[in-house]
Amino acid sequence: MIRFDNVSKTYPGSSGGLREVNLHIEPGEMVFLTGHSGAGKSTLLKLVGLLERASRGQVWVNKHNLGRLKPRQIPLLRREVGMIFQDHRLLTDRTVFDNVALPLVVTGVKHQEIRRRVQAALDKVGLLKKAKALPLTLSGGEQQRVGIARAIVSKPPIVLADEPTGNLDPDLSREIMNLFHQFNQVGVTLLIATHDLGLIQPMQQRILVLDQGRLVKDQAQP
Ligand SMILES: Nc1ncnc2c1ncn2[C@@H]1O[C@H](COP(=O)(O)OP(=O)(O)OP(=O)(O)O)[C@@H](O)[C@H]1O
Figure (cartoon, helix red, strand yellow):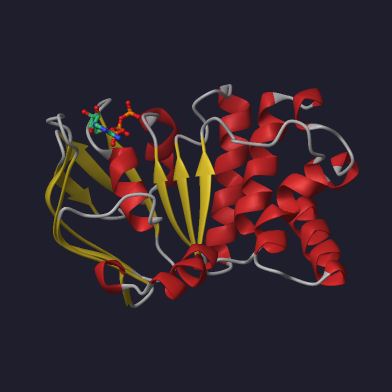
């Protein structure tokens, strides 16, 4: 589902990035990505989500070689990858419904279908009753769940999350992890970057460790 062949990423004027990363994630896996601050976790996710391009090597996502994508194929790939960020990135002047609907609106899905799918996504994250609320009237955990609903509304086979529990207390963090686990149970491939080892160790999933841009450990599911 996700493959890195000798992938390096350099940023102009920075020693950070990724160095010769090789990696293979099968369909339906749930994988955690960890490592010190600046180790390259966000960079790796951005390469999968096409927010950055590799400097060397090949990134494959759902059978597409990202270095060879034609411009018209980019929106298609974006629909196949849902992204969740620590800071939610919600539009504060739009309702919860409108925020979740956004990925469908930009790809021209019909009004009725949008309604049905947004309701289904909000139901999954337990926020149907908040559809008309504005994001800033919600708690941090609820805002994060809106971000998750937006990431899954187009039913992507791959979901990436960058520090999704970074601002949440331990109970809410476990709630979010349970949600991810439920998505994984229905076949979604998940790649989740986090510092929070205490949260991920009990989940008994595969853990990848980055150190200064190198993949230094790939610890299989026990
Ligand atoms: N757009 C950019 N321009 C220049 N350097 C960058 C850019 N993005 C990331 N870097 C550098 O690449 C390195 C890896 O950054 P990245 O954000 O991938 O790390 P991270 O493991 O996600 O860190 P954190 O846990 O602090 O979010 C860092 O040294 C960072 O300064």
